[in-house]
Amino acid sequence: MSRPMQGGLTVAALVLIPLLAVAGSDGMRTAFDFTTGVLTLVSLTAAVAWGLLATDRLFLSTRQRLVCQGIHRAAAVTSLGFLLLHGTVKVALGHTGLLGALIPFGTGVSGTAGLIGFGSLAGLLMIVTAATGATRSAFATPGKIAGRWRALHALAYPAWCSALVHGLYAGRQPATWVVVMYMLCLLAVAVALCLRLLPAPAKRLIIELVTDLIGSAGPPSASDPVVRSSPLPGAETTPPQPRRGLPPDAPAGATTTAT
Image (cartoon, rainbow, N blue to C red; front, side, top):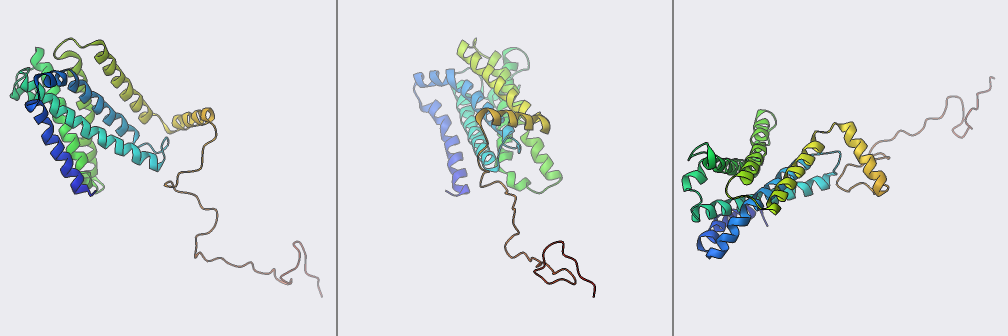
């Protein structure tokens, strides 16, 4: 499937998802009301954590980094779907107005309105981050443009923090399993961030410890560069030259005899 087709199907799915909240039954909306917020944070956490790990060149091989990038993108799209469903359900049930759902802190900055504003801010930052990820090829030129792309894409971190605050304190008292999920999300991002910020010697030490625990490392990945021990095909080689004054088959260490 081509990239344009994949993008079209993704956009169509994201547009149709809110219709589930509008056209669904009251029981479906109630179920969505209890679960979509947590699922949004969980999928956003997965996108942030896998995005942190996907660029590491010491822990992961090239093939493993590509897999991490694929999981990162899938989790990001999933988080957008749950975000749209969550916002639509909240508006449909009258828990917030359209202004509060679309504009961060549009209904106030204190109390419940302020906590809802954290959720709106997280949603807006998630959309901006996803848009920069979808248009990454347009920022591929090295230099200032690439730096701006990284700065915009890094908005995923404040989006995650805002979503965490919103989920813990906005609305009803969270159930125990919800608090546990939020704490696991916090732990996952903290571990991924620590691994990303570790200096290279510490990463190599961890790799050695893990290798000792699981046994010797397997053969290098086919996608990783392999150091060649022989000349490349077509490389010119210089034949050995006979030592001056000796026949070509003379043993090593032989000397010429003066005449």
